[in-house]
Length: 171
Image (cartoon, rainbow, N blue to C red; front, side):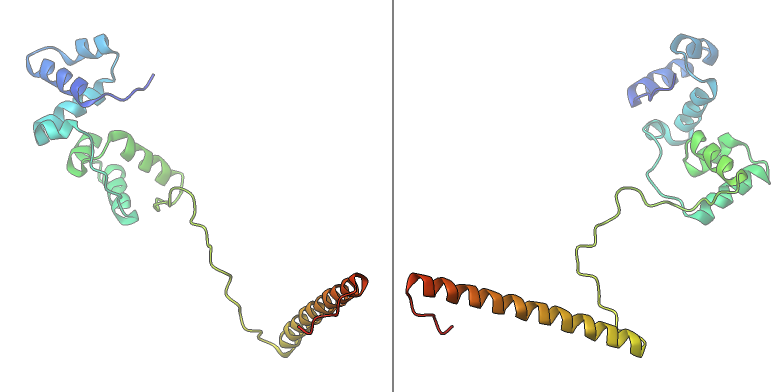
């Protein structure tokens, strides 16, 4: 079962290792992955207590990801050295390697919901003569329908006025 370990837990475990306890006994006691604990120790030795706070929140470009994957796969640089050099989690590099081996792009994907386009769609100009005529025809039909509605409303108002015995308005 995987779970996150907070800063205090990591610092406690590393300090116990530095006091002389064996990594294997601590890993058995807390049911931890030995490589993960070794990574904590290496980060502590290189960066101090800040190394146990977690990795930086920096988004690597596709070229940087490919460079790191290439160093691991082609040049054979150990995973731990890459983790320390680039301040990355081991699982992140392993994920990039797995994705690259599957032939999937390492491009950064946009996260979250796409923004809504609240503006009106831009009108595009008709390109051919036929499209121009069709657009004009559609506009004239809409105008004609609007005029018919207005005429019907005016006639309805006049009819009501006649029934009530009023004189129709001149508006």
